[in-house]
Amino acid sequence: MKGMRQYTPEKYIRTVENIDDSIVQNYMQVEMDLIRNIKGSKDKTFIDLGAGYGRVLHLLAQIARNVIAIEINPAMLSELRKRARKHRNVKVIKGDMLKLYKLLEKEDVKNPVLLILQNTLGTIEGDYRKVLNQMKLVAKRYNGEVVISMLKSESLRSWGLKMYSKLKAMVGEVDLEKTDPINGFFVSKTGYASRWWSSDDIKQIKDFFGGNVTKEILTPNFCILEIKI
Ligand SMILES: C[S@@+](CC[C@H](N)C(=O)[O-])C[C@H]1O[C@@H](n2cnc3c(N)ncnc32)[C@H](O)[C@@H]1O
Image (tube, rainbow, N blue to C red; front, side, top):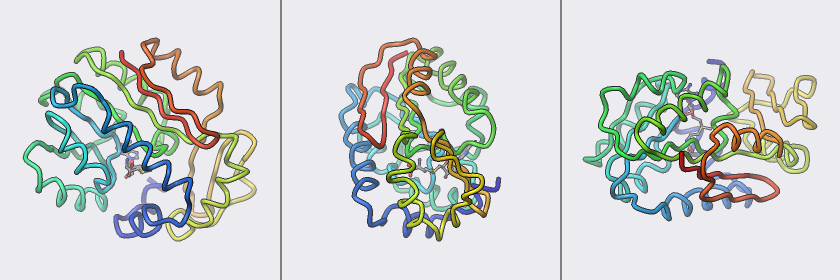
């Protein structure tokens, strides 16, 4: 897991959460506001895919019926577990979101809100479409919705590369030979890779879920979709 080895909670908090970049700060704030405004949350299970160290865990625990946080990286998991202990309605699962349906088979899931935040979808090792497929299966089975938060390919060149240079301590230095700003693909010299999404990609994702887009936040830099399945 090349890309993810760069993530440790300390580095993540220092470099991402405290980044001096108003767009990233705004992106995190807009995600939080959207989550806070999800209707009927007290009757819903919030499932955070790639929960990291638990950046949004406290908010989720406060508003949800219950929370399931899924994470694969052991370094992130230890901090995530520590934070989860403060809440009675949070369960942490160590696992791969590519196997989401199976991971949830024996869990307490009701009207799930499946969250994939901070462009995590673009950093998956493996086929991101499999993740979307698993999300759809779970949302269908338990009568749920999905929240997909993505960075937009058009802004990788104008803003993203500058932003990544501020994250150098975590993601490494940009590999200009492998990075493709036109098609929204960032690769660093340490092997961290992130896909950013075009308007066509976003349309395809909406079509794939074929459901009811209940909210769509579109800025030049990011897009957040809330889709009821
Ligand atoms: C960009 S970080 C976002 C963390 C968190 N969602 C947030 O918003 O602060 C992506 C996280 O997803 C985790 N991750 C990546 N691929 C995964 C997979 N296949 N299954 C579970 N977690 C994964 C990484 O370890 C990392 O902690």
